[in-house]
Structure formats: C-alpha cells, structure tokens
Length: 399
Image 1 (tube, rainbow, N blue to C red):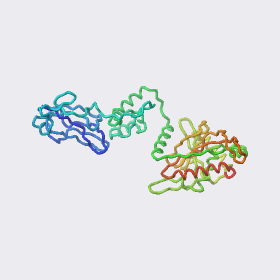
Image 2 (cartoon, rainbow, N blue to C red):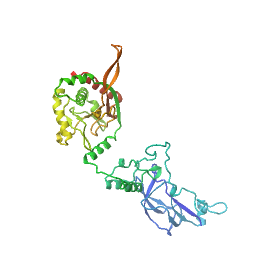
Image 3 (spheres, rainbow, N blue to C red):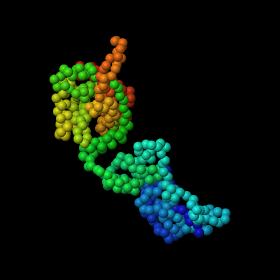
C-alpha cells in the first residue's frame, strides 16, 4: 500500500516556517481527509495542519517544539490502493511513486532538506548567511523576554530555519556555547547606553561632514586664563545656530514637528563603562566666558558619576569631541530624545591654498560631523546648520 507524505503547508502569504506545538493524533490512528492532525505556531497565530487524505498515520518525522519550513515532510499516511488512485498517486504499472529509492512514497522535500540561504560573497569575517533574528516566532519572543534578551543580541547566530532564520533551538545552542566563554557582567550604565542606542537606531539616521579651520579659535582661547576646550566652543556655536532657527532640533511626533522651548545642549563625557551626557541649559543665553566655569563643573561631576537629575536629560542636541581619542572622523548617533549630535574630530596641520598669497600655507583643521534624524532634517538643512557652526568657529568673537 502506498504512503502519502504529510507536508508543512503554506500557512500564509509571508510565512516560511512554523513550529510544531503538538500532535492531535498518534501513529496507528485512522484519519479522514482534512482532519486536523498537527497544531503549529507561526509568527502570526496558532494554526492546524490537516490530513491530505484518509488513511492510517504511519509515523511523524517531525518533533514538537522544532521549526520546519514550508514543504517539509512532517510524517506519512498509509492509504488504500483505491484512495491512492483517487489522488492520482500511482504509476501506470500500479506501482506507487517512490522517494529516495523507497517505493510507496511521494517525491518531496524531506525534513533534512531544509532550504538554506547560500552566501554569494565569501571570505567575510562574519558569514553572509548570519541574518540574526530577523524573524521571531511567539515562542522565541517569549524565551527572549524570559532571558532579558533582545533581537540585537542574536545578530551573530547562524540560523538553521527556513531562509537561514534563527529558531529557538539555535538560540538554546547559542546560549550553551556562551557558557564556555569568559564573560563579565555589564554595568547598569553600559546596559543603559546599549538600550539608548538600540532605540536611537530605530530611526533613519544620516550624516554630513565638513572641514573647519581652528586657527582663529585657538588664538581666541589664549585670551582666557582658564582655557575653554574646543568642545565648549562647539557647544556655544551650535547653541547660537539653533537659536537662530530651532527647526533642525525639532522632533517628529506623529504628523507634527515639535520645536524646543529652550536651547539646552548636552556634552558627551567618557566615564568607566560608558558615557554621561550632562546638559548646559540655555546655552544660547550666556556668552562663552560665562560658560567656562559651569562647563568644567559639569564635566567633573559627570566623570565622578555624581550628576544631579537637573543636570541631565531634556537636551535637544549633543556635542561629542571624539578628537580627544585621536579620531579624525566619526559617525556618532543622536540620543533617542534628540534629533542631532555634532562631532568634532582631532585637529591636524594641513596645507591650504591662499589665493591672496598665491601659495600653500599650513593651517589647523578638523572635521565637523552632524548626525541627524532624516525624518526631520534633510541634507540641505543639515549642511546649512553645519556651515553656520563652522562660520561661528571661524569668528569666535561672536561667541
């Protein structure tokens, strides 16, 4: 008597696989066509796989709590010759169509023949088929919530599900492998920074950059007994530029651009295990000389992790001076509650063509980078804002 495969059906237009939740019948049971026999779970709902025909359940090849792609053989049903003839499953010699050389079965993909995404580029540090948890079943989401993990934590897992997707079995193997490695606990600050960056990256972030001459600024700072740092000059220049037009610092909420009520600029300060961002309130209202003391106090409190609540939060933009690490260029990410982050790279001596002298002269130059929420600001507006900041840095007497 021929055997008919029980195949994982296409359960929805965008569904490529499903997890076996339970078997509603057992081997040896007789079933009728379209009778529910397996309960499965997709990323959308719990559904049922029905019997393709009437007959006796021979075996289930699938296992509970494992994921199988559309087209995989989940089991087999033994049918009568009469039933097989109705289904058109016999050859002209009345021999059942075979699979893998075994008579009595229908050709189809076996469970072991799950489709895989084959990388088209080789030699990469991370294999091209490491797609991470781009699709997660409800069971996977529940397990992640139980462990306190997020999809981003699974970016390096090689999935064995349909299309290279990560299954819960892949997750458990990944977690078991982690136990063999040296680990250190992440500090609450590190976790907070990670969470902020995860939320920030849900938006379309773009960046523009331009070189700026710093010679006039460096000459200007010699006028102060307590030399203000380059980051404070940038804070003041950005504050004045946004005071002239606060639109670039607005936030998109629904279908409205919400403008800031005050020009409060944060400064990124490196501390052990993360970054603190103390805020200079109303940075556009006080001249540069009056900001030197408060700025130094903020940085000192931040490095000691002793910032009071009123000195954090509520800022409209951040200034980060990654040039102190010798970096000439960077792509910082704005905080979730902000639209902008302005970065300053390390200063370098470079040749500059002077038209009036007709020769190259040495100048001190650094790159300014502006990362922004592209939903609120476009390249033109970002470029004009960055150009205004550069102009003010070249005219420090205006600060």
